[in-house]
Image 1 (cartoon, rainbow over the protein chains, first blue to last red):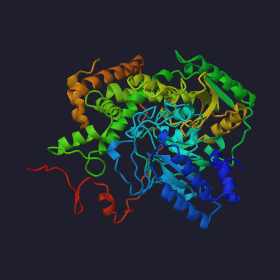
Image 2 (cartoon, chains in turn purple, blue; image 1 turned 90 degrees about the vertical axis):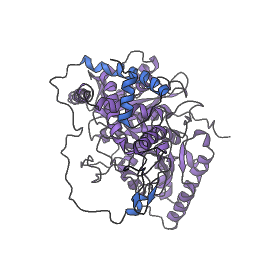
Image 3 (tube, helix red, strand yellow; image 1 turned 60 degrees about the horizontal axis):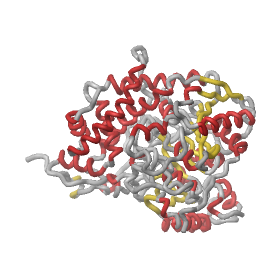
Image 4 (cartoon, chains in turn orange, purple; image 1 turned 60 degrees about the vertical axis):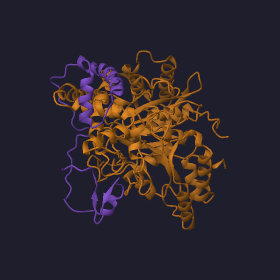
Length: 485
Length: 95
């Protein structure tokens, strides 16, 4: 048996079920490795003492019929966890201890998993490099001073660095898939309405989705099966027939039609991304799929649309942080002064910028020109996908236009940072599922990902395609443990 | 179009975020470059397009109006920066 922290979720579950390992063994191993990995700064809050207690309790009377029996797991600090501090990476929630649990994490604990701690992320999930977190940068286990991507940067770093066997992130414009691509792991953004948003700190409510981030596709399918449930507490949760994603997982994708959208060949895209894409097309064919050239004509309008819709929704969602009922409060001369100082001191620069964009596009006289216009273009983007899916079963693209970049490289230019999400944002705007799988390395040895986009509610199909391609790609992440002294 | 300092002041007031002169200038620069990027949408003619209002195209369900959480007063007040008895305390609003 290999070292505990090197095992996949599937292996750990099997070893616990066969009583080769106890939950205490596994939990202890991940705690020890996490403690040696403080330089990654992947955790905001750890819950190690309590995790070990829970593991011991589990072992006294183990329920081995559960899907995640005694498996320790750290989660993004955007999920409210009862009695464990939840910050959303922000100073304004620095002291917030939820009195309730998010539905997605509740589902995970109900299947026997144990909370290890809360993982770093961009403030309110607004960022593509984890550099907007109030709790500092996260290091990419691939190389020192390399961003892990964002906003689920701590989650990606923790899975790639083997501090947790698996995790959950959230994805509003690419926040699961882009960091997964940057760290050489698998990340799934489910269909809008698949996973409940109840208890997730809200960013842009019509785009936000929770999803799994894992070492491999099978692990990812297993966790998706656990977190995707219909929930009355989220009015946009959708009641559809959910598959047993891990049980129904198959490598047989013979005859599947996979679309290759020409608009994703963007100006200035490095040759190695194009080469990776071509390799991906070949892998898909090798698996028995058929590839078809398609057009998604409004692709280049997706980012500008996103940067109206997401900030507009954010400005409205973040109005609740007023220093009155919870969170940080600054002193003020009167009520308004208290609000303005609280929000000025409590929010970081990127969050303030987005609140102001959102406020502006929704303000009197500008609504039609910006927000309404964006919602119309969003419809056109969705129509593009609807049209394409008359001909194909899924779509294959690169996950990101480049590999991971250095910390500080893009912080002064918001637009160049936003361009990171060029291939992931259209998927959120159309509410579709998308998965990023590691598919190769660039010349610097940094991982690169491919994205498979599916029809709404067709997670099983893209998981199957990913599962088949994963075997052909046979990707090996190059982790040297450089941060462990 | 260009966002000037006066507009920044106006938006910051609407957003309830106080902004000093130095930050206002930086924000104006940032917002101008972002809006320049957003202006690309004007290339598209959308007069006849119906805006997307719901991504899932399902009708929202009504749920029955019943109390599910009882006696959670303590939980509600637990995270407040300042409270007194069962009330949130704020700076004085009435003279």
